[in-house]
Image (cartoon, rainbow, N blue to C red; front, side):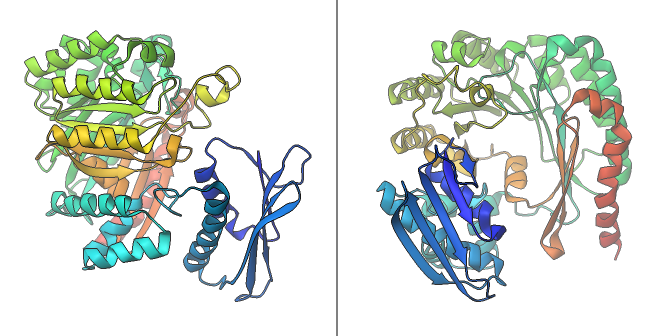
Length: 488
């Protein structure tokens, strides 16, 4: 446990997030406690443009101290300065640097994309990211490469008037050890799925009416695992989407088939019949003992079998998700997984660094799993990047999560013409995205004001079905304002 002692809490979150980057998985206290030996102290003079003093204390001894002027009225500049000074202290203490420097947000490429969109020269962006956030050259280059590719992929898209639709299916065959997403075991809900779909259709009816006349650019079915539904339920849902929405402007339609143990030929044929352009078949790893450990109730051979089945049925845009840093895996395991993926040759590949969220079983029952070795290194990250590029897949989007093993990032790679537009839109917050279903989030973009407003649905399936009218009202608050702006 680490301690944070501040005489003013205005920048507590920024300090805590940087500490989490150096010490992932640690908990924090804001009180003096006998079992805590390491503290960060922050004292502000109280004057709007006064002095801020940072100290590192261990066993009561001052390890490092920095005092610097701070203008509290300039929020962004102030937090940047605090994090830069704290980074210097922590970096010296730990004798290490973080690949992303002081950047702790989940969208580092947004910095590059925004500035390139404004006409900045790439070299100027590079200098800005290095000097302001102490980001490494390697990560800056990756950010610039991805941002440039995103600009090309999103060209011609009507950000202001268009929107995308996310449909959440919060059911899975089982819950994985590391998972914190909203998901419920499908077996326990099978008899009540019709009630869930009834509530979902009510929400979709509202969205279709409210957004009528606006171009729908992308549809994404996520979860959970959408293919945990029965074939006839998937058919009903996709037919309902087609009946309610004008799909003539849709550039892609993704359905996460996700878990190989949820895929059948009958379900894939339903997806083909509805013209689904992109699916995911996600192994996470190709090491069987790891699959067993993390609760994936399928075999490596099943991954290959379902992938080849989908290919044989004509799917020509298949994504695969992998996770590096899984318990007990070494770089040799990652190398073996990448070789298996190379043989399959998916059209896109998303490589995640393990992030242990608060709601994951791996964290909730940490004492039970305390002996598991979790390792993630820059060498592993580089290995996956090199392997993806050798397959002809180029990085096209990137995001980060808190408590990532190794403090790295998730990167999506794709063959030319196979990148997922929705992934870029959601990560770079370039468009209004409306989420329907339990546990989903709607993000309404007011582009002219550079402002994003959120409306969240409850995570509980039971509550979602009972409070569906409230979920619709939450959306209406912001969609009404968005449409009024459009009429001005």
